[in-house]
Length: 241
Image 1 (cartoon, rainbow, N blue to C red):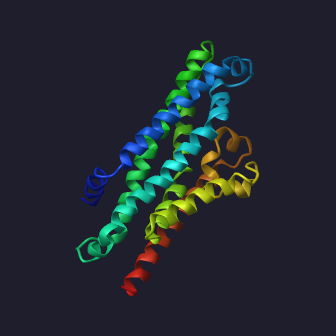
Image 2: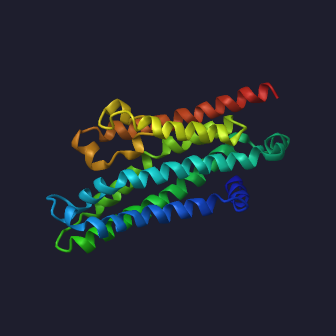
Image 3: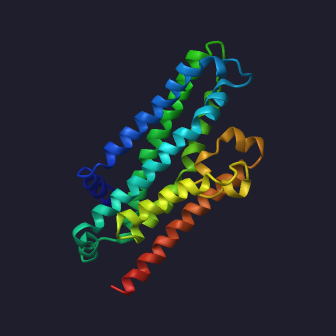
């Protein structure tokens, strides 16, 4: 019920259009990259899919992170506009359920975008590496992994957006986080666990360092902790309103 309510609300915003546009641009990027530098990658030894994801995933992830930041800000901007959040409190609607519905919508759209991106990478590999063999079970696992490690980022941005009534504050925090983490070494395991760093990791790299299970568990725990932080915030806010 609340999920459908949230889905109807975002129809009147640019949320879906922004996600769609970002997904299209990020999917086009590896195609253009291969058209320009095909010989560079086809001459490399190893798994073609791993070669392509290592070459393109950071830029594709940047698009994903930016749209998650913008999407979270858009979602809560509509709530705070014209005191909509205060009016919502008077209705028989659980605020935490609304928050989870927003997260669920974001997670589903992310799943669609990431699946499309992986599909494009596989298509590029099939086209430019015609003699290569592919393990599609591993590719599906990779898709699930890339989606899972995005969840803490989505949950954290929704939490920040729910706390900040001014959309520009949460947007600014998100953008600052994106550019701040780029300063730190991405190969540092501790740094890679940070929500704005973890989406850049790939299953091949994490597997190589034997950190896959720990990495997945860390992302799940972070997602739950940010959700609990929202629950605590809503209960605290209710005490002062």
